[in-house]
Length: 168
Image 1: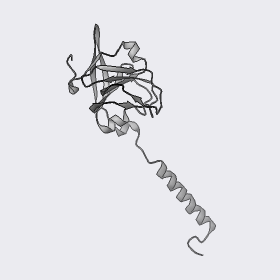
Image 2 (image 1 turned 90 degrees about the vertical axis):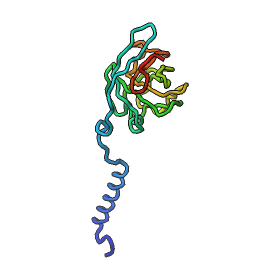
Image 3 (image 1 turned 180 degrees about the vertical axis):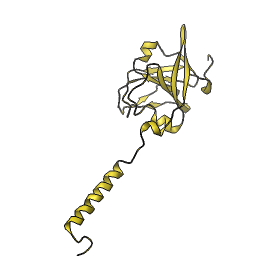
Image 4 (image 1 turned 45 degrees about the horizontal axis):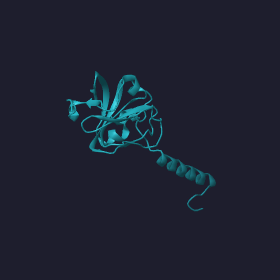
């Protein structure tokens, strides 16, 4: 007698509670590709004494897009990338959590000048990669791109919507 009249009913109730607890730990998620759509555009990298490069990029320019970045991607084209535009120039920290592709990261100031390059990042690492100078833009591309395309500090990322289309 009482709330649970049989032993079988009690086991069912306990199983149900355990199942509910597990569901709370793993909330339902849409596939990463459906959650956020990135605008695509092209950028030019001006390189003193060398021909400019034209690259296709996705833009991360909202808090949600800045947070997501290239997470949950398993592949990337050689001349494609993601350009992160931050609201204000500051010291920026990036990481590779949930990113399984090794990347080269190009940190640039508010004029688009690349101030530093971090090559061959470690996939899935939670270690922070922090700019040594104030940064407004970070361009992420497949690991090895800096060497393959001869991109160096001092080169300039030009993108009209950021006001970086002209020589500084």
